[in-house]
Image (cartoon, rainbow, N blue to C red; front, side, top):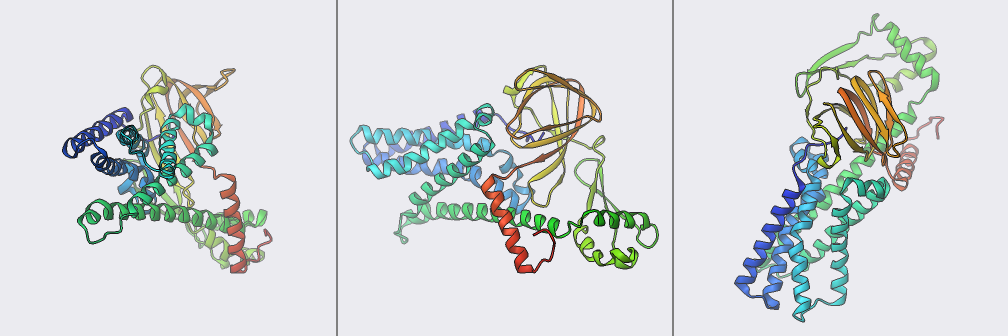
Length: 416
């Protein structure tokens, strides 16, 4: 169900808070609890908490740009974020101590960094599934992106203000963090542009090759004739686990098409050159994907998952998921379409008005932001298509970029 295995976030928070508190006590013991010692402690705790914030901010971008090596950072983004919030508590306490001893920051400084603190704990609060659901997918998207970027900006203002390059303090206490800030922002910007480019390319190709029923006739003709001069190429590729995935392609050439459709061959060959992934979800080897403990209502349901395919724009994934009997809530952060392969489950909507049975061959659609109670009576296995929706302004921007791209490429498609 798009769920990634996670460790206990409370443990992460406890370790981060304890380590930050120990650092604070050590610095105050070494330098004193006066204004100078407190400011030293502020510098140390800010950098320590930043080490948790950075993977929460850039982990997904690292995964998107550099691949599976950084998958653990992406999967545990929430844990890193909550650890950052916990590690920052002693830092906030030190600011309160400065105010108490009469060495409060200026009003502008207090407000600027105070906003970052508010965003920190709003993000931590709404990372709880039930509260995030109440906020809605667009509200959470706005809070997460505005909040994370504002916090990164606050760190950048703090780290980049030191200009005495020749001193050891710059090389130890500022330069490494300056580099991390630049790298994090660059990675996120690259991921954003890459996602827009992929989405734009998909939309452009889709629009360029949208030839209505004629295109369907051409594809059917090629499929009927593939035994005569256009054999299918089938390559078996073992991926993770024991399941074997097959990539099947049919080459298209103008000479193989009916005379009235030959001019379309070039467009079809370019748009259908991507491999088709064929999988056997009923026998795929799955990996553990624990259900959030606070979602479980009865029993000890054990869930597993495996990703089968990802769309070119990286907004959609096809997964196979199974679960042992039990009863639990599920909160959907993205659109999900499921088809049951085996087993049985009874679904109750969030208004608890009606319970529906899903069995082999049944399909259900769960929109982003919805919730349902799953009562699994027989070990269930399903295929799910997970689709992240883009907020309205971003979707409109992508559409505009596609039209601009077509104008540069001189596209003559009737779909303008």
